[in-house]
Image 1 (cartoon, rainbow, N blue to C red):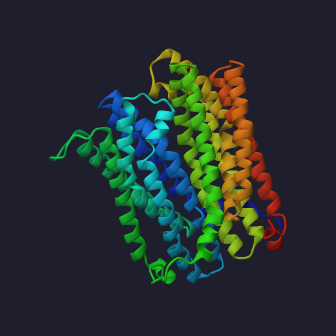
Image 2: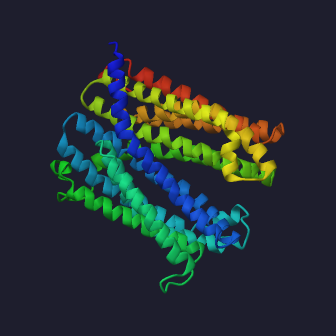
Image 3: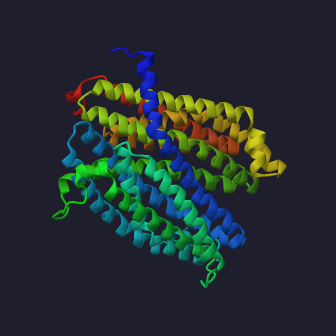
Length: 453
């Protein structure tokens, strides 16, 4: 069935209505890390290094857990499309058991992970401070996952603005808590970098409490009986969340670890290369928040359509979303091509760093469209509850193609930073092609065909 321009415009508007608050939430959440970095940098280089190292260890663990919980998005969106309201409430209650299952090992891992820093030959002075930072932030693990789980639940039901407002409040709480705990105000001891960890835990608790309170009082959610009494874990629902969520968590972790590996290799080239890479990747990460937010909305729209029993609608809505992701990233690519010097001048005045950073921004412009297509396609597949094959695709794209190509060109052939970034471009492009090919293949048939994958 062919769709008119009016249909495409209407779907695009609906997607942006759902996705815009998610994009804002992602960008505001980046502000939390930015605030921590700036405030730690005002203390000392040692405190800043401890926060950077601690965060580099914390983020892959947190990303894995949070990405696993995203499974609730397509689950409830499909139930919403099918108008199975009771199943939505049951899924929400069972999500809390999954949160508990994830948070306990994550908590203990963060408190006993200093050995990794020794293994990576981190400067000895940094290790005890970074270790204490991780112990402090570990207290926020459970509330972080409660907040994240409820957020993805709400986004699966197209309720996306509350997370944005809570994120704004969280940013203000973070600034205040950092100020008091890092600098020793209001009678508290001066905790430095460790205070940043405790501040983050306080922020996570704030987000969780506010979102739980909102969910309990939001009238449209009353029909789901989310807070009805439960006898305990119901493995039918938990298994479904794990089946969808774990591959999604692994996929997201593989992408994060690829960029982390490239950052480490940059450090082996030179200080200037590492600094330029950090600037360029920071810009690219900010741009990426747009299609990332849209991909969550795509998952909801595709899942809702499938719940209604229409693969055709799922296909249409998925490809409209993917097209918007590509369109937005085309605009960001143009921006990076036209104004790299202006963007870099915000970050550094060092001419050598700026020269390398500008060349990397040109390369970032090249992979903008690939990045938009891969995350859009991945989001569409997630809406179909299809995450296992995409996990394999990400492994092949990032670790069998992207990393080896980057290592060969950047290190072995001695091309340098640009060679490493060619690896990133290669991996993202392969992922973009394969994710979209799979979504196209899965949605060509009917519901019976879809269930066979």
